[in-house]
Length: 178
Image (cartoon, rainbow, N blue to C red; front, side, top):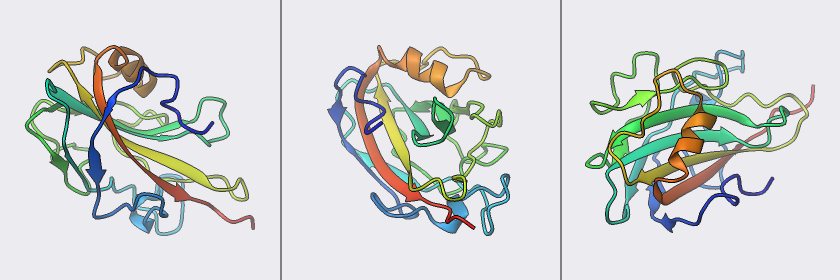
């Protein structure tokens, strides 16, 4: 799968940058999974900043997705909904258990490990390079209307009719074979 958003309606583009993740570069050790026992992994969500959201943006959502996970459906590492349109950045670590660094009204959905927080990269040893699509979605509604226990896939389905724009950076990770 080249681009997990290729089958969605086209959307305007805007810019997302990070001080902790480089587009096309490897994830930092902090963005690897401590939960799945990756040495040095700390499950720290990346810092994100975005600019140029399309006119009419009323909220944002952020997702982190690995389409290369050996599951048949990829792996959702993080999903945040209802980020106010006035917000243009999230600090490093905003995806912790408390979510206290998220703006008021925003909330984290359970990822594919069923944890409402960011979980870092943990590709299986020898499985090859994995890509992590870190995406900010500009939406035409203030409240996307999903429950706090919805899955990221459900969020994506509901968002599909509300996306005005999309900004993505792609990071990578690989665990060498033993």
